[in-house]
Image (cartoon, rainbow, N blue to C red):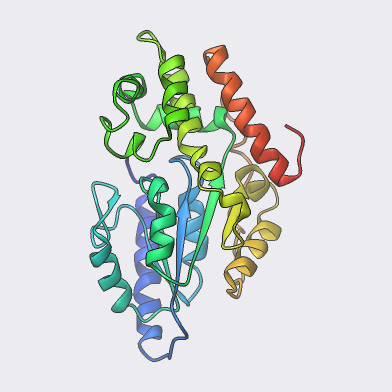
Length: 272
């Protein structure tokens, strides 16, 4: 997984972080809150993090931050606790992409906490993911044999989901089909955790977010009980929706992805 942000964006984020830390040194903080940003890779989590980073009350940790991550995976909980203890911000915000299976435990360990889970249309995720990463068929094949064989990818997978992966996997599966199946088994964890029933979890629709960014970011900041800074969402556009041709996905894999999309759409109050 590579950092998709440009050098300019990363430089700006580092500058913002320095400015915020300087200001926070001279400001008292209320009880610290933990915010986990979740979802499958290539679903818009960087965009969420960058906009939340505009707040002077946040301390934000991307998966490329060596203080909190090793090879894109969150470091030991004691390390995260130490970082939080040394932070002067009111909100400790951290990515939890490889940690989707551990989110309930993380939320219980770090309190009070909230999770923001973003979901993006599977076809656009597949197109983006297969440009950024390779070997989806190999990873899915390893998981089909043993759900623990591909590190975090199959971790926490239920027996029901594993049986489905075993049924759908084919040795000649193409990249797009394997990436779509990965979209399924990573996002189905949202429902397996019963996150749709929890008031401390906010589900965000990527397409709504980029289509009406100001309104959606206002909703996000209200959920976090954070003042929404001026200009939030100003650079967000909907150009990424359906940007590329529809990927060639195995019909059976497409069917389960569409079924899960329908479950999310019902929560969003939209038609599948």
